[in-house]
Image (cartoon, rainbow, N blue to C red; front, side, top):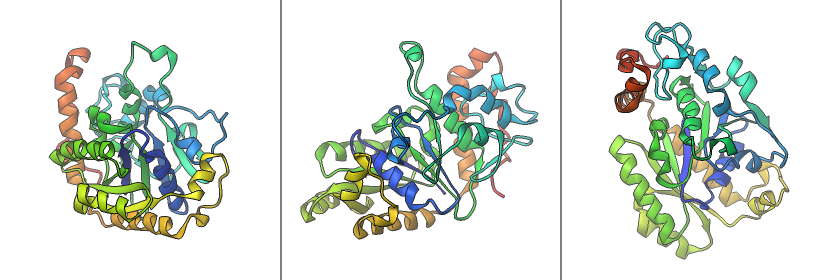
Length: 310
């Protein structure tokens, strides 16, 4: 299953993404940092000097590999971030050996991690961060996840996730929500957009201290509240660089992670819908700018009969 963590900046979504990835570490798993603030590696326990290879810096190579010998794609240069797979495309599995993983996926304390890369000085004033995130969208468009396999993505904060079709690439999105008015405001904005596209969202409360916090979240988000994480000495220690085994997480917080996994596993898999959403956003991008820039009708890259279903 594929899942994303979203929420207000500072709500703790990166921390929860890291906890959930560590909770799943014994399963086939790929974690991806697609946030403009690249902190997932640190949250997983990478040292401060860790330099991970960036997906965004290798977008051309990723496109060349994924297009394979798909006759609908003339060259890697004609691929957009939304280009869907088709006959002849190279598909990815969560846990396999391939040139992209060999070069761009790093193990961090037992969690296989890929990162989009930071917003660099040379990008200032001339580039959009979503050009880097486009690498993640391409990977997920071509990735077939099987039973008991997981992809965990830390997304950009707030409604900025809607700047691309990446927000539709998940079986369930966990929206991390503090018991505050501002955090609830981000929840309302997010679900307002997400549900227009049939995106499933579950709220995970964070920094919950007492019954009043739970009551506040229930009153504001209703049945969307799946579970919550309380204040945690385990998390505080990790934030200070002292990483302990995930088995030492407080029982109530560990139970919340289990509830999240159960909710994710319970989601139905609909590859036809997944393909239709990819095609929809590819058409939008092709018509809006891609066709003019590349001088071709890129909607012809869509095979309406192709899905990732095994």
